[in-house]
Amino acid sequence: MTAILGLSAYYHDSAAALVVDGDIRAAAQEERFSRLRHDAAFPRSAVRYCLERGGFTLDQLDAVVFYDKPWIKFERLLESYLAKAPRGFASFVAAMPVWLKEKLFLKSVLREELSKVSGAAAVPQLLFTEHHQAHAASAFYPSPFSSAAVLCMDGVGEWATTSSWHGNGESLQGLWEIHWPHSLGLLYSAFTYYAGFRVNSGEYKLMGLAPYGEPRFARLIRDELIDIKPDGSFRLNLDYFDYVTGLRMTNQRFDALFGAPPRRPETTMTQHYMDMAASVQAVTEETVSRLATTLHTETGENELCLAGGVALNCVANGRLARDRVFDSIWIQPAAGDAGGALGAALTAWHLYFSGARTIRQPDAMSGALLGPAYDGDAIETCLRAEDACFERLEETVLIDRVAALLVSGAVVGWFQGAMEFGTRALGARSILGDPRDPDMQSRINLKIKYRESFRPFAPVVLEERAADYFALDGRSPYMLVVAPVADAIRIDAPDTGKGLDRLQLPRSTLPAVTHVDYSARVQTAGSNAEPRIRALLEAFERRTGIAVLVNTSFNVRGEPIVCTPHDAYRCFLRTEMDYLAIGDFLLDRREQPARAIAAARAATFAED
Image (cartoon, rainbow, N blue to C red; front, top):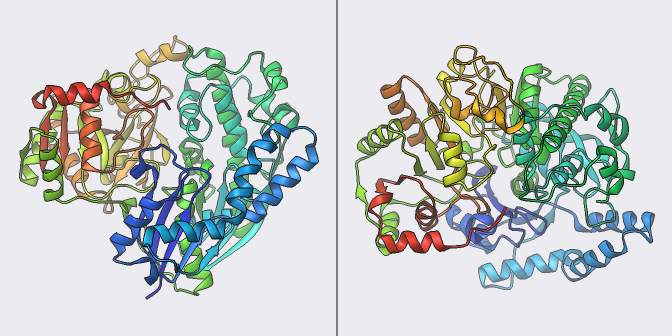
């Protein structure tokens, strides 16, 4: 038996993953335990969880693998600063202490941190993968394909910002790369920054904002900011960006080109920034489509695997699926840096230990349900410690009660089974609502999630019924593909409004999950979905004839998705959710202790 622990840390979204004889046993992000969103610290709690779930102690592992090669990254950092000197001195001074203290001596730092986890001085052998190699491995090896083209796109690894690979069996061969500072991910992040959102967390907001705008700056972006070749390769005009040597993403020349300064966070969102979002989204989709077309031609493969932060752009993924360049696309649900921990472990298994690959259907990710789970006793102990008011129900009774509550307009916190690995709540740590309710989107955004009103919500739908509601070709188990709503439920109406005024017009008979461009970010609940979310969808369909629910992550703005029963109860009290279904227990918010609600509501919400 060969047990391998993969790690990602020290940049953003630290995580740990355990692979045993090629099987993915456990994986989790550190943020879920620390409650610090995008936590970059060493994933001590995630490591402990993975070892506990796998039944291993640290000294029983065969290797620990890190998802990055820090010396190569440091080489890139130095070359970038030297090429631009004396520009960027402030950024250089800010970066060097961390590198000289920790990152350059990462092997010693990792040994020290692992020793703290185990309490012993000896740790397993330490291995290192390249950043994009870990991304590629996380995409190909768990996929259902025996061979496939692999495309990885993110901000930057060591040098690579975009890379292509060819996977075949256990083999994963690199083909070509696009190098720093030319980065599609950083181009998108620059516009995220310009629109007043936080880089590395606000890209979802920019993508959600894009349909409210018109891509009237797309040609200007192509003419001035990015030179896209017919094969999808590209170069950025660095005269407009400050991320190479500065402390900002864009500069004054960028502002002058687009006729306005960056939007200040939390100020009014104007049409200008909506149009900017629409424009960079259009350019991103075009670039990704060209890259994929080139990769299809070069490899002759009909299947494509995606990873890296850009692979979380589910609108671009939806366009790829509709363009039919490839017959099938599989996207790693933890496509960002967290998934690098899994990719590092899988790389070691297949390439260092020469382990065999077992292809599983629908994939090898177990529905991404790889995080902690809590049994009934643990949940009841937590609820009693909180002095909560609850009732315990048989599973079938609980499912039927929750379906009835949803039909009546209630918003329900849903905490079931093992926590998801990756960015999306997939029916284990979710907030659920009735998609037919035209007020559901604004209600959940403003009174429960405490976030911007324009943010769309995703539908979760029984896989076998997805085609009744969405023009979706194939499965979408990880909520990473946007598709148009089906003509059968579409409501065509004169679209005379602009910007956020377009929110007022219903676009389908399921308005709570239909975006202003008649699209939806679909999750299909199939055989590998959390079992109770499927049962709930079936119960809701029996009552309404609709096999769809609103599904958004169980958290409030600025916080990670909940992990423990305590997290769920605290979040439940802080919001205006009506009910909490946690394991076999059902809680009515109106019956909870007034002092507990007051204490929870008095807590300061962390900002996004």
